[in-house]
Length: 464
Image (cartoon, rainbow, N blue to C red; front, top):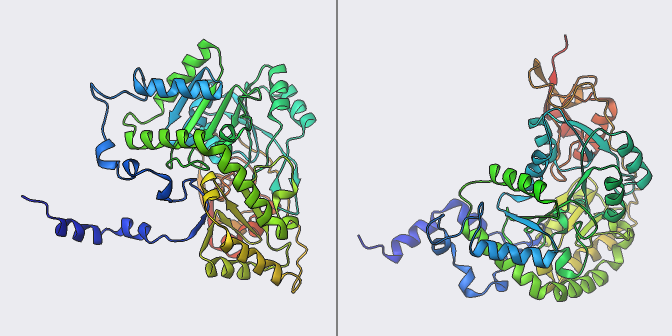
């Protein structure tokens, strides 16, 4: 049978997902970092899927046991990043975080994390039956975000913690960068392994900034897809652990990774890394200059008020600028802009190195309209602080208990049996085993609106 082009065109015309995505023509101020711009890829890369989609054979290297060209690639990674061990994951930072925690934990151990840690860390703590302890960063009630970890607070928690693992996030979903150098020194003082979820700082080394590994972390985890021209799911782990610990870590990374890794994603990831090595610093400098000019009119309403900040994350508090959500949403639609986040009061724009190649006239017009609207109805908004729920049970102890569902607005006083994790940003407001109190419900209402807490239900522990 001959496969004629007309028949294949008819198949193509009827593809639902393909055609929906083909018409996704917006200003992408969100992840992933390649922004859908095929201009940055040479012709040889653009159409690699069928030819590169192979499996482990006599003539291909194996990601989970590299001895050939994948090993050569990883050796180059170690040289560039100054690590003695690296692992390229095709299951994202989630896989790398969970495998790292599993490597150095035993059932019923403790784990110490920042409260605004990604939900993947909470999930693995539940699976491994780990008792979660918390570090609470400071809170900015004008932007509604967790900010810096106080060094004295960090040390006081470590002094009494039984946990052997500490996991912190830097930069955060909203761009806040921690002083990893100081925190790593404190962790070493108390003989704790420090794992830094640096997913949002995957571009740092390529533009001359220090990674968490450079600052003393034991393990540093980078998402490549968030800010580099790499495919979704691609992430990189770096470590400088002793040989014994490296073997343990390597084994767990293999146990939890698919045994059929995609060579398409591997090839694309390698290209994205090499592209960023060659052009990253220049693109970042150009983008930084553009963002500085672009954001001047709205600086007072953004996270740019902070100095230790990932500038590729621009959080705009439009309510502080005197603008309602309905107006902000209509502006986004008017200019065909899709942000990373839009909630009751804020918009979060995500930039990547690739954005340096394009003009920002559309976004300039958007900001101009925001400022033009300012003053018509000034809303002096202060965000509620996130709740600090009381722990009644350990996160894994709820599994075998009798549960029932109640509306969130009616859940006050119940013990939570199902974590409530708004995404974005992806960290929990209340987790399993914690008491749902009045401030928890009020916080969710502010974050997601009254309709959310009225319509949505949550699993709770059945009384008695």
